Image 1: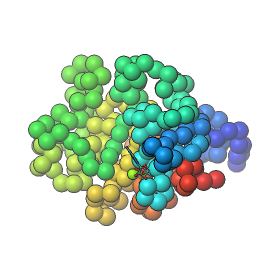
Image 2: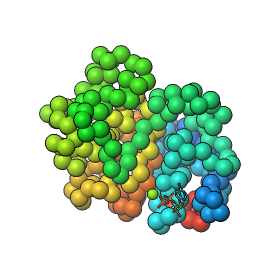
Image 3: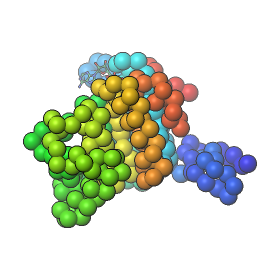
Image 4: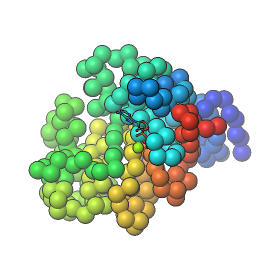
Length: 243
Ligand SMILES: Nc1ncnc2c1ncn2[C@@H]1O[C@H](COP(=O)(O)OP(=O)(O)O)[C@@H](O)[C@H]1O
Ligand SMILES: [Mg+2]
């Protein structure tokens, strides 16, 4: 077994080494991230690298700045200071429209509340980010149907969110996050609104999607089981990631 540490991030397989801790490439790198709301400093110098196919959990007390960090890493908000590179794009230097296109293509989001549009079916909800991204309806629908199958939702394709269970609604929002095959998916308390059985199933799903699709996830959670299942658990405290 070889275990060589060269940086912060991990690649998966080197020769005989399965899931080695060879640290080489990162697909996301945040450096010196500061963010304050008025006179309240929230993030005070976040340093973070994420490797492809990693599942990283983020924990910390309520108000520690987890959502603030996730929104910045997801390019939904800007830091006061700091840089963010995703796949070598210096994202906060992109122009507004370029950034919107980048976000649509490269980043998926899953929130605590599914935020599905009530007047559209599951299939239509899943397709929306793909259509916004300019792909053909045929192509997007085909991918949405594949995802519905993977997520065991094919029977539910034509149902509107109100006719789905909480677990199904959240799985539809996972499919919506995946429709453009993003580089990374950010989830903010994704199981916070689910009972424990549905929460456990959703958590397992993240790891299955990593194994099947090579999907990278960063997941903010209060759920200790999920936090501990992750490849790495980051703790935010006093505005930084604890060492
Ligand atoms: N838009 C905002 N305006 C002012 N204060 C905010 C805003 N968003 C978050 N905060 C404050 O920043 C701190 C961190 O919030 P948040 O990132 O939501 O924490 P967490 O997700 O860890 O619970 C909290 O004190 C919160 O009240
Ligand atoms: Mg939060």
